[in-house]
Image (cartoon, rainbow, N blue to C red):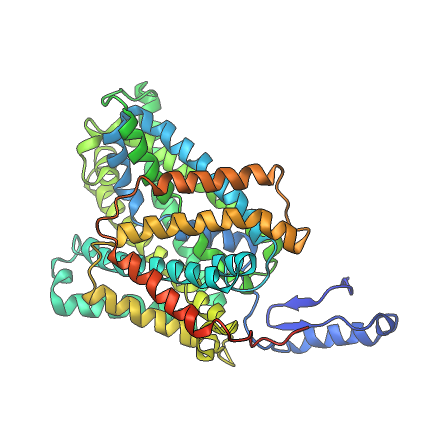
Amino acid sequence: MDVCLDLPLQNRDFTISPAPPAARSGLWYKRAVTDAIKNDVPRAGLVRAIGRWSLAALIVNCIIGSGVFGLPSVIAGYLGRDSIAAVILAALAMGVIMACFCEVSSRFTETGGPYLYAREAFGRFMGIQVAWLVWFVRLTACAANANLFVTYLGEFWRRATEPLPRLLILTLLIGILAVINFRGVRAGTHMSNIFTAAKLSALGLVGVAGAWYLIAAGRIVPPARVPATASGWTHTMVLLVFAYGGFEAALISAGETKNPRRDMPFGLMAALIACAAVYSLIQWVVLGVLPDPAHSERPLADVARLLMGHGGAALIALGALVSIYGYLSGNMLATPRITFALGERGDFPAVFAAVHQRFHTPWFSIFLFAVLVWVLALFGSFAGNATLSAGSRLFYYGVVCAALPVLRKKQGPAGLRIPAGMVFSVLGVLICVGLLTRIEYEKSVILLVAVAVALVNWAVVRRRKDPRPTA
């Protein structure tokens, strides 16, 4: 086996640091590498076990949740046939933002994602603000999706929504994911891969069946039932940008990715292409197959029922359960790493950065996140969750876009340098600011709470030194 001796060798659970140049001329370093591989010497800390395709699957898992099963009818009501073009245009707009994330993420190999990018570019205050917003968004979104899982399960078992069965379902739903991710990042990654494949298979089956039906019937161009308006375009673009959002959660796990500088940009672009293809196909099929898509409460289920009978509708209901649980599994893998990163850098108590000696996972952060999701799912109200998600996400997307030129000056070359980086940075910020002005903030108390808590957090730790050893 050929080994590049100029770089640290990382293999599953161990790391060999570079030897001095003089030592490399002999057999010592090669023997050390061979012995490490043979004995599988455990490394302290997290394990780099997420490959590039698993990372792409994790990003898809964090993007596609329950929204895809109802969104097509909503945007059909706003734009009619033009909603297909809107899906593609939104993908291009998100592509601008993701391009900035591609370069910025290629500069980092440690856990933290947007928190780390903002902290490095703009300092501790901005880093902590971004961290709390990311964490609040993922926490409340997971709790809301856990509740939605119980609702969908009620289609198969009517008693699922009753208090005691609901308590047991939520406990098992969240507890199983917590235990799997506690026992190792590989187990969590495998589960994410399985659910990503399952949800894409269910959506792909409906899409392909619908496309076959439309082509055979000669109905390739859907009828224009609703005239598009400027207001309709605005509402649709806001909804679609968030339909493509959530990818940032997967980037938090860079410290467990095999080659983050290379794999983060690949995973982002692969996921964007996959999601754009799925969303576009589904939108076209819904518009072409359903007689009144704008007034369908469950457009995918209605399409499946028309094409495949009641069995098809049941398949889509099952697909929704799989998609929601897959979304939860992806977030259970990625989101606890943000409190781990905060603890690692002294912005949270050190216990949040605790890593299990045997399983090499941030056990405290995982179980705390699981418990909070469980509590919020049981007792929380999510009336302001849409505003929290919208405002928070656009804010830290804009921060990361703005960080691109700052990090170019601070750090020099990146793993990936996008052409016309300044143009992408400015466009990304403008997209985020423009959409921020279109959000309704009537129910924004939880957003203000998140900002206030982050401010207190910063005030407590602002003079604290980074506890990590310096080189």
